[in-house]
Length: 166
Image (tube, rainbow, N blue to C red; front, side, top):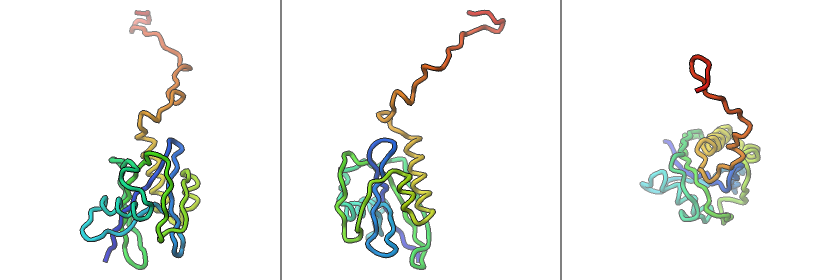
């Protein structure tokens, strides 16, 4: 029988983004985003939002869900297939989580440090995909003039097919 779970990759700030990681309170004490199993007939997003609130204290008003990111990963956990659906959300303001009994610590870390904490390739792949998604879909309010500086590009004159200026 397959187990289904859902979670939310939570980040804050602008690039380089800081991602929230939670350290499990049971062996092997892995780091991951808040996530958990479905209750009853919950949808993936309902389970992700509920688990995030249970494990962090963050309510839906504390973050903004990214409506264009969703990744599903399947792996073996405790001898059974486990499928986890991950969404992504940006914190609206700086706020630290309230730890539940399921976790012993949390960290806000940039991608490089997050990847150093992961024990499984699937989690590395998930966070690289999230970072790429954020870079490719950067909100306009995060663009800086220095990223769009065209001042050193020479302007070509327009010439017609005969080589004379128009």
